[in-house]
Length: 296
Length: 320
Ligand SMILES: [Mg+2]
Image 1 (cartoon, chains in turn cyan, green):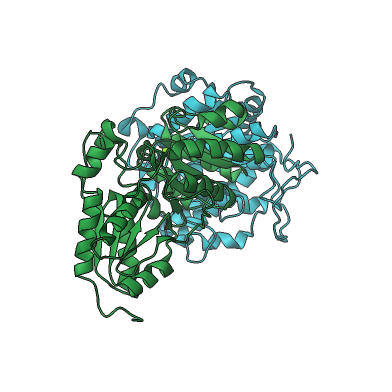
Image 2 (image 1 turned 120 degrees about the horizontal axis):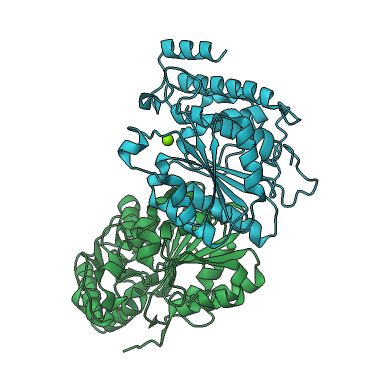
């Protein structure tokens, strides 16, 4: 499956105004190129949060390779037609990490890059937590634990319609403290939804502290296995291993797959990495300049 | 004294849903292990591929419904009112109300006439909760005939809908030729003395109270407020002007229900004396009739409120 390999049949395609945006890469970028894209996305994330004066950088930086793999190598989507009925769905359940998503959506041409500077400002389509008014955003989020169930609904709809699209849901690890995650996990396995893949951004930090301090998740993989899931583990910053896991998840029959992606919160900025202080506090001007230098 | 035939609103719902499912393949139904009680088992038997049981996991159910709606389906979610409105309120707010998704929540076992199961099972906050969600359409049908039409109307309108039904049979106050008009108060009995605004299960008792008190010289108007959001402000304002006093009657907590909604309208457009027949707090186990009697929702309570409202009536009445 290649990127943007939208088949010509576009049933129930919603009409969208031509955006006049050309898609940045109309071919599958190589791993080397993806590394470059990841740096660019991180710069966009930091700029967005710096300009807005608020936003969640730690989790936006840890999810970048996951998002870039999906949007540049895995998802069958059409940025010119975000409502295409048979598109693959990507649901950002950890919706506070929307700067990462907005950066990749702009990069893909869902909207103009200039719009990123409107993040969190009045009259913007780029809300502080993802909302469906943004082209390419599938779910309105902001309260943790709901995205897996929402994705389950998308996957059931595909099954009813015998549609081949696949649904991907990105969870935070702290988010897995929510009971609803496990309601959804039980139900997705019960219904044997092999058209559903969950990725957990396992950066080991949540809002206040390290996840092990707030609420132990381990043995995390065993929990998913016990709930009836196909469990894959991967380095969440390694493109080759992520893409490999996505391929394997899409092919796996009869069970939903969870990819536990080991990541580093604040990845890419030395002084933010693995530091709970950078979950949501915006960078100072000095921090911002230092960070941008590291991302050159 | 009038007595009405009794009929089940939840059974009317289950049969109507099956009918709708036969003509609309986009309709899917979600349940939480109470599907015989909500009568959605009728749909499940005929359309097993469009029916999903999630067990009692209401938070999951509401978000799944949102995902289905976002994918073009018309999900109907049914469980008991306490489980469908209280438990997953965050999911209703964020996943359904904020993106205004096309999810229909039809809950049975509302109010206190659920009876012996006690206060945990008595849904007395659901109107308030549903109406507090911007964009939610909220309907409390007054009988089985209205239920059938309200459910059909819900399936045809775009956006979230909450419909409130009951465990026990309630009075059938409409004829078969009744036409339900979403968002419009239903004038059942005309009168000039006091206007009774009643909703859901309380319309029957309100009509009986109006008839009984007519012999004592008070001529009541009775309006069935089946739609609580959006509210028919016009009929409320007009009745305030024409009758000069109002009584609201509901099987719901006094805060945030029909009484509060009507007061909000009259307060703005035409303030008149207002008496509220509603619950003052949580109740207990008991037979439905015993609960209605003990907790102040009986015919005598409605008549008492009418007399009080009539005594406080604002005169002269506009237009007289
Ligand atoms: Mg985390």
